[in-house]
Structure formats: structure tokens, C-alpha cells
Length: 170
Image (cartoon, rainbow, N blue to C red):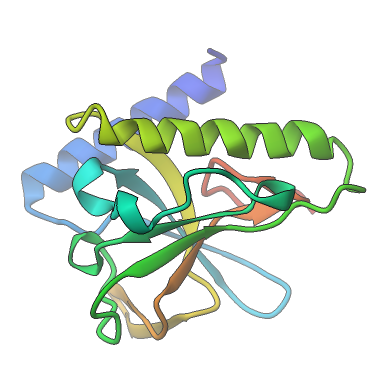
């Protein structure tokens, strides 16, 4: 593990511990500049109780796409219009993007780790999600968001899953 990865992991773990100690259930939201406005990213600790495995994809489709069905009551951002499930989607990777095969394989490996939660209910898988475009700002200070639709996405750029909340290189 690189020093930067270790430092990021320590910061994330510290923020999770401090968040739990303070009683806060909403993870820190990273607000990053985007072409059309701010993008809202967050770490999401996936657990078996969050996922409806029976309704979720068991295999990645073309381009590494897959969908997980989450129980909205376990998602940290309010989704008032989502009664049955919240869809967490992994976007498609075009075959002509640089390192497409490697990026698709990484998505398939992530799906396998997530599906393994069904057999090990106390385990967790840390992922990064992008709340755009189906998010509205309820309050800027403190930042409070709400989903307008029942869809969120794994963070994705340049054809691949992005496993951090930092701004993308320009």
C-alpha cells in the first residue's frame, strides 16, 4: 500500500470513527467542480443489510455495467420518493477507452466483493458514489442533500470506476 493510500485510508477511518462518536449518520460529502456545476461524491460503506441481493445483478453486463438494489431506509441521503428500492448503478465502459479491459475487470472484481457480503454479513465494502444528477441541495450550511429520483451511481470517469472523492485531474 502506498503512503498516499494509507493516509487516505487513515483519514477515512478517522472520519468514520468521529462520525459514529458524534452520532452523525450522514457521511462527509465531497463537493467537486464539474463541467455543468458541482458534483457530490461520498464514501458509502456497503453492508449486507443495505442490499436486496435477490433483485440485484449477479453478473456484470457488457462494459462492466451492473445494478444493485439498495433498501432506501439504509441509505444515508434521504430519498423520499423511493419506497421499494434505490438503484446503485455502475456505468458502462466503452471498449475503445484506454485500458478498457482492465477497467471492466476492476468493475467485475468490485461486484464480486459486494456479492460476497451475502455470505459474510458482518463484512463491509467501501465504495464511492456520485449523487448527481438526481440530487438537490436542501441546505448549503450545513450541507444537506436529498435525492430526487431512485438512482445513484458509482463514481465513474474516463471509462472507469473512481475509488476516491478527490477532484479529477484536469
